[in-house]
Image (tube, rainbow, N blue to C red; front, side, top):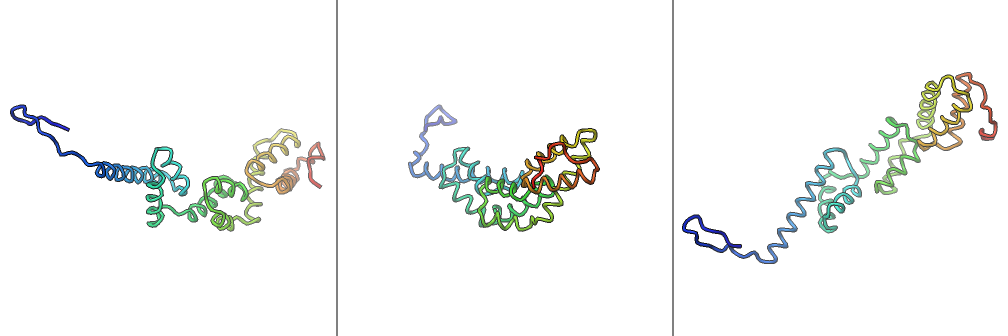
Length: 194
């Protein structure tokens, strides 16, 4: 490129940029951009390696550059899928009342490996899962005062199903809640498992 000198209007040529310099600049720019993207995303919340890889891919970062940056982030501990899975499972059970199988589905969708999913779900035992299902069912039944027991049963079982609880556990918990609330048996006996 040429530029005009400050005095006299003479033109002086800037040194030409060699092709390998251009490629090196692009690599440095892409790596720096990838780091910036990852850091911004990790500032909001922790993420899995797959989530970050997808974000980089969607922003046009080459796979080899993304792999290099993600490997470095994993080395320094900014990406840790096992820790992510543990925290995710704990939060989803406590805050949203999700069942273990729904938590596992969501972790797999985020790219967490099967051993990390199993390790995270070890903290979700049947007792805590049943207690959470009971708490959700109690809260839902209280909010539906005045509705027929069959309607309440259907809605509570639907709520528990959306949260990932098995049909057997959902009906068992609903049966207890309806009995404790003294609402009587549901009108449709076929809805209850044998």
